[in-house]
Structure formats: structure tokens, C-alpha cells
Image (cartoon, rainbow, N blue to C red; front, top):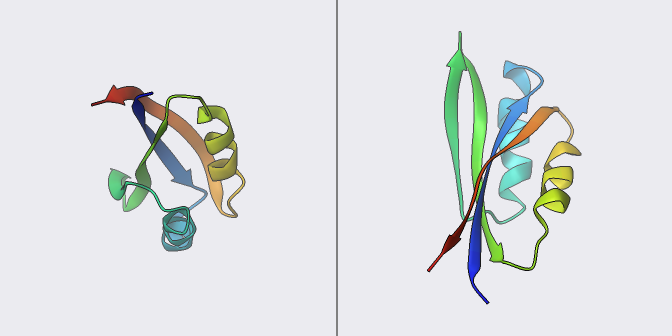
Length: 82
């Protein structure tokens, strides 16, 4: 069984929600978490999780979308890692 890296771009509802959204995502123990500038001070949270290849991308996307202050969640990439 191989591991899979899944990267998401999470957009907060506004500039004020960015830090609280990022903090809540950090509690989910991601492999990495960062910021992606969008425009005029607005930023997205770029987050990567590593998990087994048995699935769970949709479930993880739903959990991210359920965080208070999240506007949208996009799956950026899914790929096997060695």
C-alpha cells in the first residue's frame, strides 16, 4: 500500500477569518500548511495531508469545508508518494 499526498486550497470567507481557519486546519495534523496570496491582502490556506491510498479525499474535503469561516475548498492535487 502506497501513501498519497493530497493538497487543498481553502478559501476563508474574508480576511478576518484567515487566522482562525488556519488554526482549525492545523488541529487536523496536516503534513504541511501554508499561505497563498490571492489579492488585496486576501489569502488562501494551502494544506497537504498524507494518507494511505485507500481513499478518503472526499471525506477530508468535507471536514475542511465544515470549518467555521470557510468559503470553499478545492482539491489541488492528489498523487502517490514513494
